[in-house]
Length: 266
Image (cartoon, rainbow, N blue to C red; front, side, top):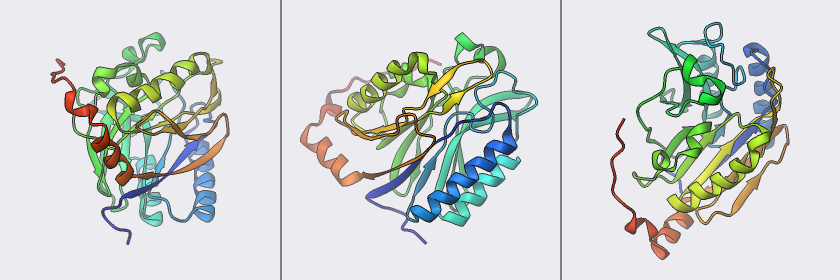
């Protein structure tokens, strides 16, 4: 078994051409990519998939929603167990007749943690079809503190503020090409202001609403420098994060000590 704590975190970002409202084929193609990943890079700690990776960014949740015991969660648990790594991404979950855009994080031992998208994208009517989450999530994996977020959350720095000394922020998205320059600017901004690594995973292709997605999945270091750029590649990218380097940087330039205290009113 892999060590419970590690100063290094090997991460795979999967950037697919998500098929519209086609869960079975999306899972099939993701499985092929993960199998290739396993063969070419056997030492991976975490796989990150984009927002709504089984359906695309649909505003028709009812026929595609699953429960936390559904087929997609079973698939994620199987991947995590067989490959001894964590896997995460967002999908549509139904609970008590409400629909959530839920970020699910599955660990190798089968433990599941999740975050429900707080900021629903009103421009597309997401707020009319889904229920907003109310709680920011703080999870730990292999000794790394991780904050998960979903797409539109990226625009709200107060919500993203690093109040728990997180090492990594993960943003999964369906971020259209028409506003991709915002994605490319805001991800480094979140890394710089929070002094942590930031990972952003987007999709490629065109959806049924004729929105084009150019990917640009990436990873940013705490100084705002790019450490991985996937451009518009349909496939995966690999990076290694080093916690020792992160901690040394925060000791050398401890901007975090001067941050403001605040409370978010829900």
